[in-house]
Length: 553
Ligand code: F6P
View 1 (cartoon, rainbow, N blue to C red):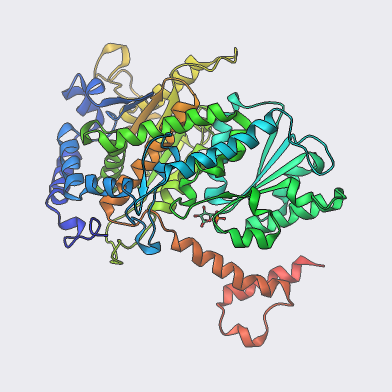
View 2 (tube, rainbow, N blue to C red):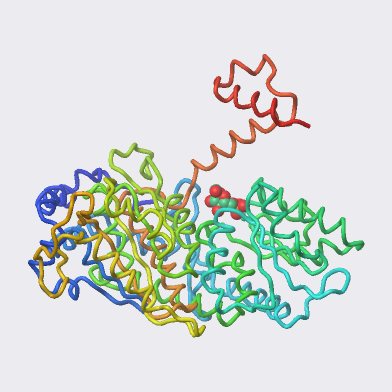
């Protein structure tokens, strides 16, 4: 792909060199000092897009840093790369595929082309089929093989075929039909399946099996368990036809498994697993929240897509978030990014973002296969506040790790009549301030900027000076969640574009799968024969032998 090819390595680019020099100047100033030198910093370093407000003032940077970062984006042809993705170019070079997840939320009448074919009509057709099934279930009109009404939806999938819909269902649970039960099964550990189904009756269950490849061991294993469970309890030839729906790109494997392909939903090869939340992989969520809420979610994503494509870099939220992540990672040497949502509903959001960011950008070579000598994706982790405050925030405030954080919150409470919104948001804002300024001289304390207010013992001191972003959405709605997810998708893309890596493949995951496939036969048989021992390291040999000796049976 022409836009990705570059003869100058990133670290030799003039702006990269300028940023390195600039960082030595920035590192001489603390966040408290940066705030003291600009009494409008909080106002100046904030932007709004749709329902999202991003305050990036609590990062260790200045407006000059932002200018340099935007120059770097230009030098790395970010604009051209964004356009290439939207135009359906093969931006996933190693698999020769486009990454056109933006087509999945393009509205009716829009045009998104792949090789001269407009993809929007087939996307809309799939959405219409999703709606028909969703409406039937929500109206209690879908029946199983014995005539009992389907009330329980079991979503089977893993990775991108699980994390997105699971997170989205939790995020939008407030909008869900409480008469329906939606559960997720992903782990190859059959306890996951057992716990998800033990109190349900198979006659009332619909299994939605999501697997782009339809070869993923975990998903196939859980689907076999589901089929066996149904067959053990339902005496009908229609068990699979009435209780299983597949979402996949592999029609052949679906048919071979025995699932009717006429009821199957197609996943196109231009939809990456971790970018499939807005495809038919979201069917279970649509059933839970209803088609119109799901459409609102897609609208939110589309709004962010348009913002990303058309807005100048300085006001472009995904570009800013992505370039600030580059700054923190490569010039401030943070090695992890804490995702801290102040919303119980967003408790699966850190896990979802882990895959989105780390599977996309955890790469050690560029698109040309050249080894990279700078760090790429940091480790993403996190938990919702305020719970996390009573867990790992101690390390954030007084530990020695170098990290940055994204705080996420909502301004208006949900109308559930139990609101503690002010308390929740007070905690969020307070944490961003203490992380930035420490507890010795809070710039905002009693309106006395920068004056030490107390004398503390060493063990009481929080030094501060930790960078963070704060994202505040107006309300937790399908639209704002759509905007938030697309914001992070495009921020991840922005970072990959600067590092010149392929954000859309995941070869590292494959090697782990292959290794597990080669070990499994030894566990099923009597263990390692002497023929194999010289091929396998002694730790692996010993672990296999130990397991077999203790396993019993
Ligand atoms: O974990 C690796 C991976 O290939 C992910 O990228 C993907 O989301 C997941 O496995 C599941 O794959 P599939 O949808 O093909 O079952």
